[in-house]
Length: 391
View 1 (spheres, rainbow, N blue to C red):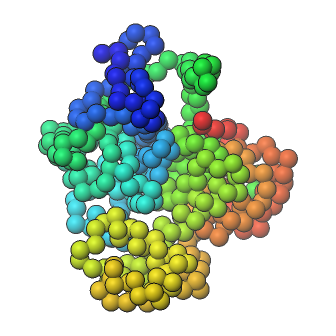
View 2 (view 1 turned 180 degrees about the horizontal axis):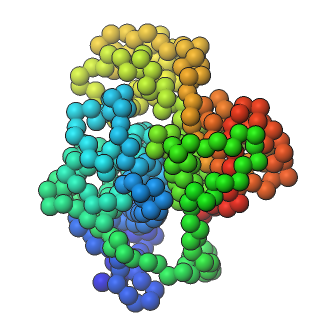
View 3 (view 1 turned 135 degrees about the vertical axis):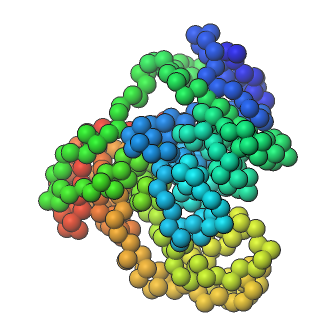
């Protein structure tokens, strides 16, 4: 099969639509279930590249959670703490390595992952399928499926869940094309290899990069390679914890991603983990409620008496002072940027979220200011010399 007709393109009015091979060859995918659409395939092919490269770079099974052609989360198979199992709602499940990777990927930003497209570097096993069966998700791409996992996924969404299998050995052509306004763009594929070799040029006083930070910086950079630019990624313990995608200003990327990283850490606060939820509250509603509880709107909701919609008793608010004290305990965070930081304000914001290791392109006329700000906080900064714009 060298083409597949689709219901429509990005929007229902954009017809006809299809995916096909320009060279007349066979498509490297099989649709095992469902009827994936244009955006589904865009998410699938971008996310597959991410997890394939992430596994090659780290040697660990990898997973990604995509929404609108950017990752909401990405991770490798690092065992979860009991705290993370609880805040990711997987404390009642047995987790294989690839299931643990997906639990981490989805847990990075659970609100953004609602209705995600999933990518796995390894065949989908029954543990991962069981995890997916109870989450709101649009589809999955993986190099294979165990028979039991496939049956579980086929039953999801009343039998319409999108399941794509990709040929693990497929290699795309070295030149790629894209049409915009009837005009064809042509470029060489971004085949840059992101490896530890990029993490050797340290202009800062601190040049120490522990193995865990190396792994997390590789994860951040590979994630950024498939994130709509401008983009910044915070990572810790083998997973993204905050991704800022598609912003026009780099400081806005850093703030957006940093705010997401802060929410990820605040979800682990004892007050959040002890919230007295009603038994009938669904998992997505819990995510939304936790987000409101952590936000500055919390007092307004509690004062209006709306807490009865979510809780069995009125919870104590999480004050601004308590949040700042909790966030001040965060450390060991890695930060990647898809291009250079133009000013030290990005470093100031990153420091507030516990960043101690940074990898960015370098080459700004204000590199001296960025380096000085890193030295101010003892941050180890690596200049990669590689830009990772993705459009």
